[in-house]
Length: 308
Length: 169
Image (tube, one colour):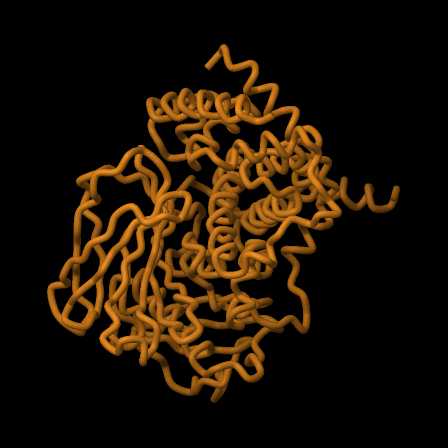
């Protein structure tokens, strides 16, 4: 790589013309809690797609009360995001590596505010809020703080329901034992938060009711090799899961189908990565559409991956 | 201005952010430009990376690794943004058309266009290696791949970029 002076020069010429003007004031403005804010625009349907272009991240307020770290730690947390389809806000799972000290459940809730790895997913955490968790017995008290806890006007109820359900599922996925989740708002129990009844603790939902009907267990941007096994879970008609692979130009290069272990309830499926030349690809898995286009759009999940 | 600087100097965390920003902001925006081909998006993603770092500042296990954290964060955000862009381009192509009143300078446009045609990993390796002068080991660490893969991507990427630039009139 030492002889690549021409490459180096080309990159420096191209990038050197860029003169950004951002300041640390801009950085701090992104972090600070803004009063009167709404929700991530991502939940508002078609506009969401455009919002994602600029990497929507609804940063929570700074955790100024956290103690300074003592030992280096990196841990994995499981977080749930919405599939973000207008007709289906059901949840998808991602595993994130997080650095930091503190309880795993708090780290997981902090991570819920982060941008999902999969750009098709949305986080539904209310903008301008933070979530603090305390576990007492079998109940996790999740206190949502901030100015952004007003329901979205005219939003379909699913948005609010899945915003809270994503917290419940995230808490339970990172807890060694099942936990009920009691929601608080600015330190106090309320009969309703975000138009949802919150006078009693919430429990983890029936996976067939709250999880996306087609899920792909591939990390966004993964490096795969031909012959690798790809797996996921699906609740599909006749247990049939169809898959397709498109190349960097968006042209389909392979397709096929596989069968989940059971019909119509979330159960595992798998198939092998076909022979493909090195390059960047997108893998999409989907349920079939028994309605012939009359019903809701078929659920799907997709991930980009690289063959080296 | 004097008053503001005084305030900054009295806050060691703020001074730490100022120093990091001064040293790394412009290079990282330029890295993001090379990775995304979009100067506005690049600056936005880089500011987001700094905002994320600031929010986590008291959870950082080793403040000396902040620069590496920022680099990884920017590269990951660029990769994610590229997919966002591809999603949006599929759904709303007209809304993402380049503003004809703001054309890129020719040199930059040619190189960025060529970079865009490379596979993601090759583009990332080339930029980290030849723009930021990172070592193979550092690149491997940042991208989560082996040093051997870094070498392969660098070699293939350089060859492909040369071909693409050669084809440009």
